[in-house]
Image (cartoon, rainbow, N blue to C red):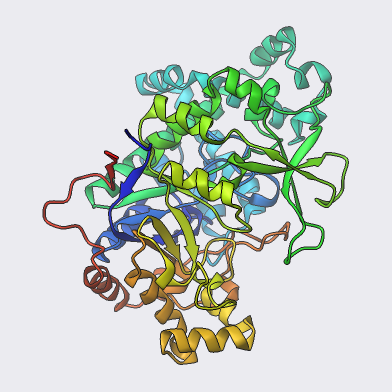
Amino acid sequence: MSTGAATFERMAGVLLHPTSLPGPHGVGELGAEAFKWVDYLGGAGQRLWQVLPLGPTGYGDSPYQSFSTFAGNPYLLDVSSLVAEGWLAERRLAPLAAMEPAGVDFGALYQHKLPLLAEAADAFLESGASDGFESFVRSSEDWLDDYALFMALKVEAGGAAWTDWPSELRLRDDTALAAARRRLEREILRQQVWQFWFDEQWTALKGHARRSGVRVLGDVPIFVALDSADVWANRELFFLGDDGQPTVVAGVPPDYFSATGQRWGNPLYRWDDMKARGYAWWVKRLRHALTQLDLVRIDHFRGFAAYWEIPADEPTAVRGRWVEGPGADFFREVRAELGDLPVVAEDLGVITPDVEELRDAFGLPGMKVLQFAFAGGADDPYLPHNYGPNSVVYTGTHDNDTTLGWYQQAPEVEKDHLRRYLGRSDSEVVQGLIRAANASVAAIAVVPLQDHLGLGPEARMNTPGKPQGNWSWRFRWEDVPGWLAPHLADMARLYGRLPSEDATDTPYRQSSL
């Protein structure tokens, strides 16, 4: 009998979101630099590229608060290819070329890149579009129609959240929506063109990665943003009032790190209604994710066992309660529709036995973060000698400081534990942890590029709870030392993370258990 698990082959990879790629247009794009990055990974013996959610971002620029769980981020579109195809003049890229290359200024991108993309889309449409575009629109209509209309209405509303729109639009009155489709036809088409281009460019990049022996591990957050096409078009699947506002929201309770917990604000699912529909929305979501990605990490996996429900009128997460999630029934239904799932469970934080039982019942690998390993004793589950093979080890994640930044601020007792555990001095701990991750029995070892480059807190990707100033870090090729690629390839080979001669073309083996 199948467990629904995918037994992952042993491999090493690098965590880098595409926005962090170098390039001349103010943000990483899905063009030449992305292809060069994939080639670099393949040459460095790294068989996995981990990315964050790829959806369009809004306020706060977080990829975890996207306007759609299905759409791609237009900021990632390669404008050089649009010039090559004749949709833009080269001189029109000057405002992007003038942007600071060391980081991402999302406000400037909104001001300069989106108008250029609109101009290019108009030129494309005026040319008669293409058969490929028409085919894409037809094949994607189950999410694209709602998304394109949602974004067109948002543009018309000056960016306002859908919960602030006029009631007939907020509550999706058929007559009002039909009028909006006529009124906003051009903007709807632009949004569709951007998604067509994203699909073309991402598919080409992912195909190049596969031919280079590199697989893509992506992220599916368990919850979606309130201000999203997902919620606006599927209000019946969420705990919302008659006005569209959530009645309860997601978060995590108070703990050692926060006396008031974390109030995320995402609307919560009506799991009973989802179950009655065979979890069709989630099946569609994961099926779409697996067309874009080879492997999927489900963020906040514990919410499938139980989640923290907070009344929407509470300003903090203190006054909440644990509510049972859909549990094993969800994964049985999804497996029946999609087969064995190449899914990684993000099981960080305070994890209770029911979460572990759910993860293990379906054979899903959990996560181990080395930065968490040195505050306890020899039985700490994040220490490498306590791992099982069915796990994914990280030096740190996008939510952690860089390993150097973490070590600089760590309590002396943790520093001492780490130095003794690795047998390394202060100047060697970052490389020591990278080697410990690769040498461990964990099937997959992932290291953020910042750690490979030995960077400090200035290169941190995200600080949870900090509303602004995140997600902006980018690297430059001149910061990548020449010795790094052969060093990583040697380490991957040394610790058995390169494929054997008879390895298959997939990053995992279907379970026969």
